Image 1 (cartoon, one colour):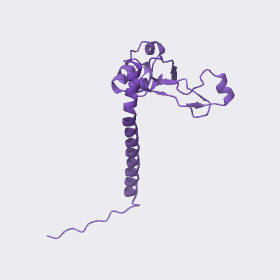
Image 2 (cartoon, rainbow, N blue to C red):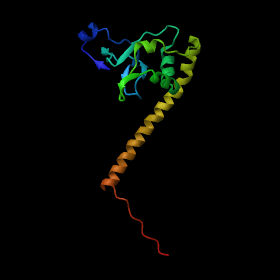
Image 3 (cartoon, rainbow, N blue to C red):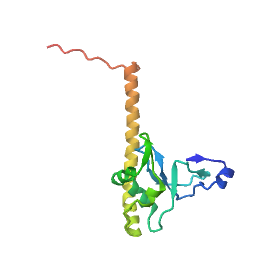
Image 4 (cartoon, rainbow, N blue to C red):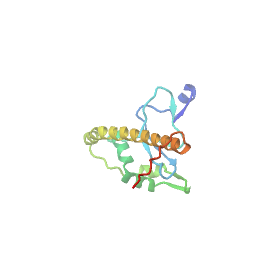
Length: 160
């Protein structure tokens, strides 16, 4: 996201609105095609030139589309469409995205899927945060042990 002064943001066609659907059009091969629904933060925000804002069919729930496009099987289909001359930068174009087939159950079923996945996604995010905390704690402990800030008592050898 790029934050801009209100005057510049209002004059720009790239001003984001709550609920806009964004997808990264250019990035590393592992990150190209990542997507999400923009949530207004109260500050005028424009999207970067490395992103695309998509107009979504009203028969397609944006949260369902986000879940669908972030699924590993769908991501591999999507990233296969990315092209580029560099192995470190891949690009999606609007032509490929317009022709990308999306599984589209009826809107009520899409909303039911989103509703059922919400608590699972929240649990995964919470566990991910705990895991990240433990990783930092482990790194800190390893640093303290390797620098000698924390001493490990040596056990006395047992006599037979």
